[in-house]
Length: 240
Image 1: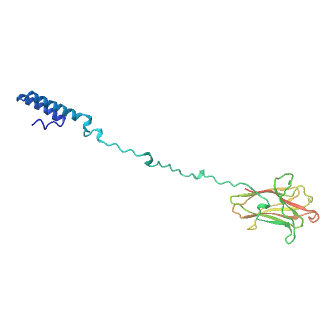
Image 2: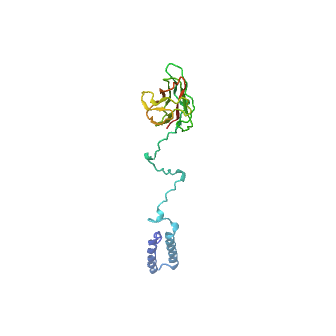
Image 3: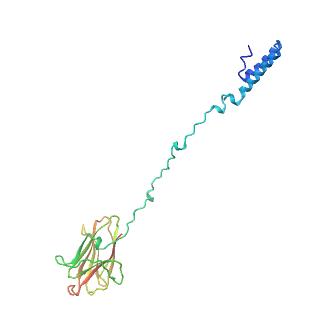
């Protein structure tokens, strides 16, 4: 039948109405016409209902992207930080107080080839100034020499020390030379000739040196150390 194959879309429904008009003119029974019209109406409603499927160009044509599980997503990279050289702090050397315990070697205060007195970890005021630690040696010979050597620790840039004769000295007529020396080269880094009642504050650069020595030598006297001892003291020697 001509009308049976034309009920697929809305446009076909419109053509059906026109067909009914034509058929009504040629004497088709009213019951048949009613059945056809009802079918066309249902087909029109079915073609426009949401459940009939997406139409071309509608938003439902696009398939939503599958959601990626949170634990499967790539981690957000940490921002790279460039190291600022100016922000790098240089290590600070901690001051290192010295005594005979830290010494690499000690030479008693004596004339070479003779016996003498060793360095003791004791200190008296020098030129009226008290000190908390230091070393003292008895100079009991006319030309006595004594020395304490230290290895320069990594990071140390200088050594500070005060030199002189103790205030409680009995022989006040002597003059003693105090020297800081580079042991390996034999070079003298600082030298002071001090009489009783005098002192010298020494601050010597030691960067690049391996071993330094604190040396005391008897220079002159009015009363021989043989008859009345004299003493040499290094007060508060410290690597810095």
